[in-house]
Length: 229
Image 1 (tube, helix red, strand yellow):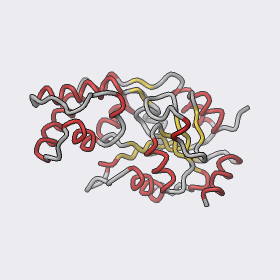
Image 2 (cartoon, rainbow, N blue to C red):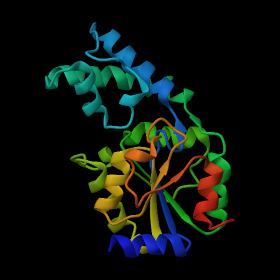
Image 3 (spheres, rainbow, N blue to C red):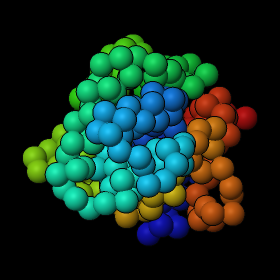
């Protein structure tokens, strides 16, 4: 089945492209890291490990447990509230699209391809960022783990929910992300995967599955998706 899907990916234009957000479409590292630091400062705590770009990607609670070195639910709730207070106000306004992303997205839309976002970021700041950057009319759907009650457990489940609810044909769809778990979530749903290597996630081809493709620039991704020479 995987071999067939990747043959389709190589031979036909996609009808739907689903994107991860952080590290794929937007550079939000500075804002996110500053808000994690603000959260620990507000709670009078010292993080158990360095607050560095490699922590970006997993859901908020998972990252806070890693940084706190604790499973104390009350502590994680305090930290999460402090993070949200920082990030959901001034923090997210520092978010910028990577150079060339806007042109790439508009070219895909002009070619008749539907676009969606599937992200581990919370749905509230995700929607604010999409509006802030001017992408409200670009994406047909935006999914996040906490779009649902209770929140979905992982990105693989979220992608599966999106595929069903949006009626997306996996034979003509692709997921684009910047982390190994993005590729794994795609494969869990029989979706071909393209690794965006311009962000702060995947950068070493040796850690990628042989089936996965990679794009080093947004313009290169556009050429790959539109089958341009």
